[in-house]
Image 1 (cartoon, rainbow, N blue to C red):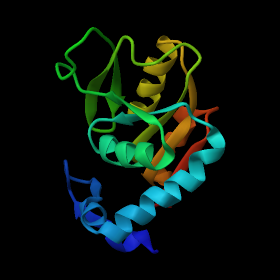
Image 2 (cartoon, rainbow, N blue to C red):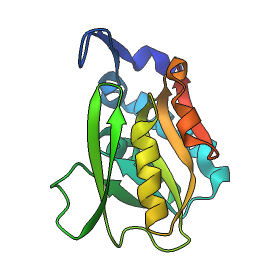
Image 3 (cartoon, one colour):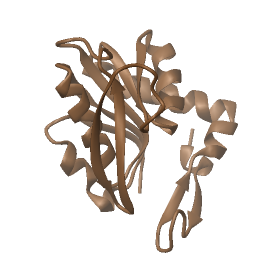
Image 4 (cartoon, rainbow, N blue to C red):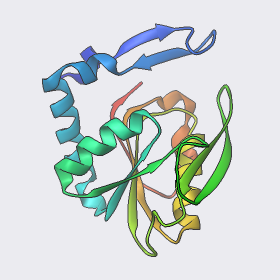
Length: 170
């Protein structure tokens, strides 16, 4: 299935000069969503993850579907103030500001292989920050999986030496 047909460009969002890649048409189409999850599962199975970690918020959508498909659990990295239990946090820069992510202190078990999932790889800051949280808790980053990679931003360079998988590249 040509998943590109289900990605909509939104110019000047969230600020002027940025072309936002909107995945909501993909999510709205059952066949496209199923195909994207099945394709992603096929791409990442050789990474042998023990658990998946979805990044807020669109990473939750693909992370949950992929976790069910692969028979794995799902951890979640959230924005500050959203997790009810004790948490670790990390702050990082985005292409248009800065942000912080949090993860429950007992989310990752020592030595656990964690596959980090999100909808989009841009500059790599969010994914790299999530990897720091995994490693802080004693886990191993098995790799990263994205629906879309914006290759021209070279975000994968921040994720070295971990494998980076994607379905679509712009």
